[in-house]
Image (cartoon, rainbow, N blue to C red; front, side, top):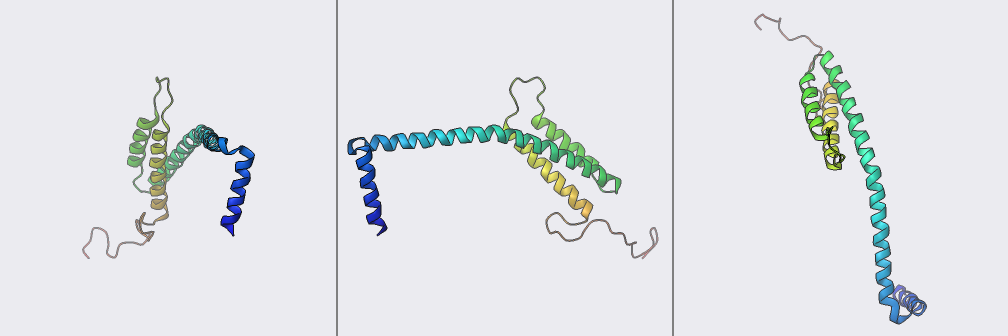
Length: 150
């Protein structure tokens, strides 16, 4: 039944457009859809650039705060903070260039910041980054006296 209805709809479209202009109308429809799609992608691309930059900077700052908090609790965090900062700046800092940094570099900086923030969060929460099981430092004393023999 759907095939018969489709055929009747096609006949109505052919009659309205004209059988001799149907192929041209189909090409115009495809060109219109293509133009609309390219416009949407361009608009979203311009907005996405700002969103990715803002997220990268914000998540980097979250990572920096977590690294400081981890270092105050005795975890290794300053080395990671220095390394991530150097790589982050190498990716996005271009003070004398006329053109803005490509979005791919900002995406890489965002991914770097997210990974660093997740690792620092898991260090502070005491869970292993991959398994989620408790690990790291323990509040319990060692089973034997420090400096002594077991």
